[in-house]
Image 1: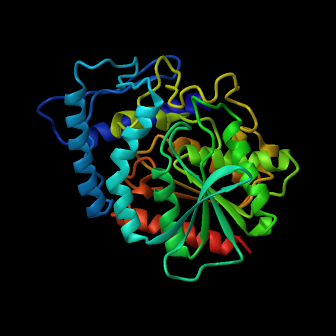
Image 2 (image 1 turned 180 degrees about the vertical axis):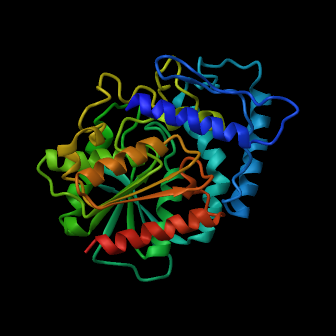
Length: 370
């Protein structure tokens, strides 16, 4: 089979080579190592013409911002991955909140909601309901926010909860779970489970949904594995966005996105860079709660699942792998891949792609929380 694949690949390359227009300068070619590693030469990747005009403009703006950031970062202390690191997590959290402030403001203006600060089972939460409108009293959604298990509260909670609440007429309870470096796994999933346990006293589990983006997407998958393992009824449906049911930063897309999107660093010496400040220290990557998609018997107990990722997102591989695992387990699964989109593109509601994804989220929960 490998010999046949190599022959077919060689024949295809020969056909393509004879079909290419003449070049003044030969195109650089990839080289292939005996262990399957591909050495990719430098190449130019334009914005995708299959993405919306708004998304194309945003991609250009982001590229300019990244170039300016790279220029400003020259001479600063960097990690081996090339990141400018902040040792103080409080500073990192404050900086991210400042950076996200304008996006949060635009989202709340577009999707008006009432927000109540509360606590459930001793866990701090923000409760979102549509502003000035009635909302669904029979169903509830739990949001677990993104932020690499260390930052982005409450900015990511606003970005993930307000659109779904306002658009869908849902009550959304966003959970301020414990994060690193103050806490380690399984603190976040324990907090999410505690909130879930209280809410299903008022709402049937089959009408309770859970979702999140990035770390929140990973945490959603972890919660879906945790509930049956701890004798709690499974949620009615879940949404895993900007992530998958495997350890963060795994698969081909981790490398590809690092070089075509630039939001996250590539693996160093084959190992993903830990962006979680050690949240998973001491936990095996293949653990059944941390990476449920590696365990068919765990996936078989998942509820209907919606996955959202992008062609330029580092989470494309984890999302695709999780979708395949769910299909093999005969669990209803829907995978949305945004063309030209990066990590958690649902945050940037100025694009049609993000608005379409938000509507798909609402429609998914309406259809599955019965």
